[in-house]
Image (tube, rainbow, N blue to C red; front, side, top):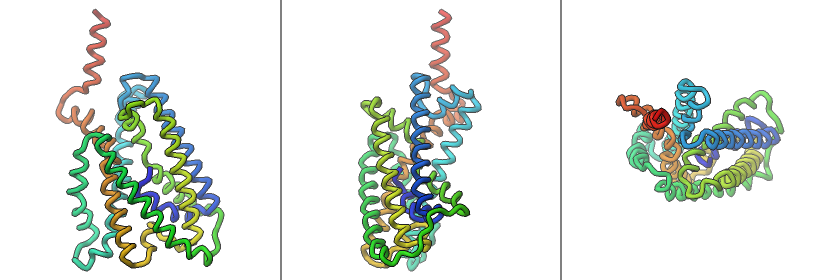
Length: 294
């Protein structure tokens, strides 16, 4: 859940208000967790045939449900990852503009490393990169808070609820909880998947508290002057440069993790369909039917 969205949480609070933002984040978190537990319950009820979210969609609504669910996962995850590229280009453009590089050029320069990491097809092998990325993100959060704290005494009027822009807040809050598609892949990669619900609940509780406290504090410090990406409000300096570069590098490391469900789908049913190979699951089901007939 912790990715580029965390740096936009203070701006989300400026769109929803202090109380509206806190309650909205809590509501989105509860809804997200409820949906994850529904997925896990459906997967357990279907049994071994449910290897992915798409499989659950097929069992629930047939082939149409299968295709619709997988298309939604692919489009949503690709949209989230597109925001990663926007964050990286906006934060590095200021430093590389003197070299004649545009935001588009910066995106192209990051692609080789992203593509290389995306070739890693195991969540277990991606774990060290994820840990390093989280370390960099938490370091960036700490620096942002330290720079915002002196502004607290000069805080402007804070609104508790903003009905006119609350829909924008909801969109950003939903984007912040971007990891729901990773639930089943993570559970499948665990040695003891029976502990996954408790681990997921603990992680989401921590993330929710982090989002609410970080967003509310920074919004209180900056007021409505908070930018869409909080790192753009940081002062110019060596430390700020290192923090921004570190955050951009963390997103490069997180990118393959967020794209994992996409590759799982494209290289699975869609890939076999493209090369006219029948899905292995359908073959298994046909073999089971033949055994029953015998």
